Amino acid sequence: MSAQILDGKAMSESLRKEIAAGVESLRECTGVVPGLAVILAGNDPASEIYVRNKGNGCRETGMYSVTVKLPGDVTQETLEAEIDRLNGDERIHGILVQLPLPEHLDEARALARILPEKDVDGFHLLNAGRLMTGGDGVIPCTPRGALHMIRQTGMDLNGKEAVVIGRSNIVGKPMAMLLLRENCTVTVCHSRTKDLPSVTRRADILVSAVGKPGFVTADMVKPGAVVIDVGISRVDGKVRGDVDFDGVKEVAGWITPVPGGVGRMTITMLLQNTLEAAKKAARK
Image 1 (cartoon, rainbow, N blue to C red):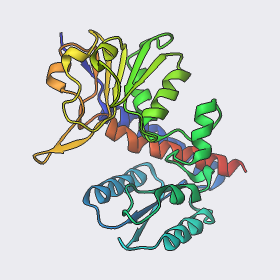
Image 2 (cartoon, helix red, strand yellow; image 1 turned 60 degrees about the horizontal axis):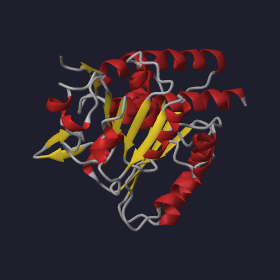
Image 3 (cartoon, helix red, strand yellow; image 1 turned 120 degrees about the vertical axis):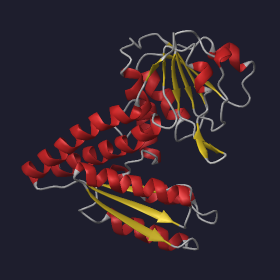
């Protein structure tokens, strides 16, 4: 029996209606309209698509949005000056620096420049530390979206075996922290993991975020498992995920497609983080 599809598009549409209602309620009660600023340096086609989709999401939910476009040869000083300007703009509650930046720019320095309360990507070291220690910080959008999808299965997560493939600061590590918060027993795998299939076959929840198309095959999956595919690659002009979807869906209990899975949820969680940042600013 084929796995149930975790439809990121349908989940996202439902959440965006709730976000839009939250935006309208905040505006009526306080006069505050959540504002998101995206900084785009250079002309990377994929980044331009992502930024456009984020702007569309803001318009769909009634948020204020601006895109700051900078040339590919922008200096570190100019980039940081733009971040400083947005930090001081009361209309802006969330600031996002679109990654990757041009190679000559210091990514870590730029992200650290964003005020933690406006860091709606959840990449600032303070927010990362709060996630690690169980504090109240901004949760990175992709892991937050993936966890929402896992919860939609109705599975009791207490004590479940979860395996995360990938140890990036953007997805792998925060995903592991979120699953630990849900009382899962978590294993993080990476390129040096020995006998990876023997580890992944124990997983009730398997999350892959390595960016290698078709990397996770049916023989690596426990029957009935929840399989969350975070990977995005382009092969012959088509978008593919880490998971061999056709093979794995015959083994898993639930599975996310690519496209139409976690990617859509990522932008929706960015909108949710922006709304929450605006609410905190309004309370202050």
